Length: 265
Ligand SMILES: [Zn+2]
Ligand SMILES: [Zn+2]
Ligand SMILES: [Zn+2]
Image (cartoon, rainbow, N blue to C red; front, side, top):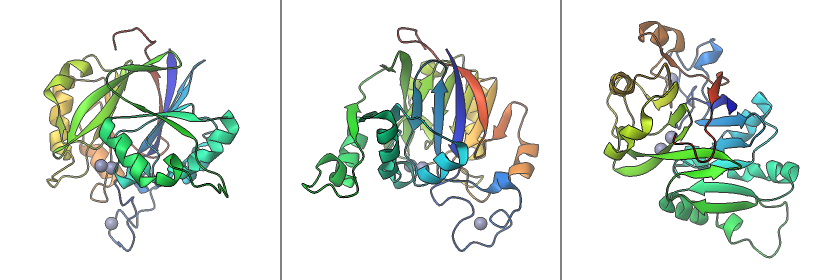
């Protein structure tokens, strides 16, 4: 199943430029150094359009990249930078003509129900309208309109979070450790998107050096780093990365081979 991935946002939770910062990257004229909050969109040819996370910048990202369809939402975890755009899903409800299924692990589902209580426990008067989400708790691999999704257990500090594998492609944002059970799920990747916040150590995100160790073990054909902060200038950082590894950027688009329901990966 041919599919197209668009990186909607490649930045850390503050985004780049960061409010009030005058560093060289935040003032850079290179559009690759402008990073919105992390999210990707996957459009399967003849199949569904999947949105991974509803970032704080969802509306801006959807307009910038012409995202006209979302058939399902997959949540990696419930941190604010990954969920705060949920209200903008209303437009996709209208265009789709109904509720959108969303998939999250039990903790993220509970957090979403609390954070967005007006969505999941709606008041009597609906006013400007509410997002319509049918929330499903992930307990293992699942399928969306015939496309297989393999959840990948990761650690983001001490917190378990999810990455997702779609056929030959995996999206592993917000992590600093791969669960031992996850390594076999990540064999034979063509393209990997992986968290690499900066060079300095961080308690919940891979550094560039740590992310390169994951790349050395998994050996995907191509790796893109995401969740990037203002410490990493796009061009200079890319020049120092090994072949087959580069920083992602907002608007980066590439083709993948998604797996059909019933396939192993
Ligand atoms: Zn994040
Ligand atoms: Zn800065
Ligand atoms: Zn996070």
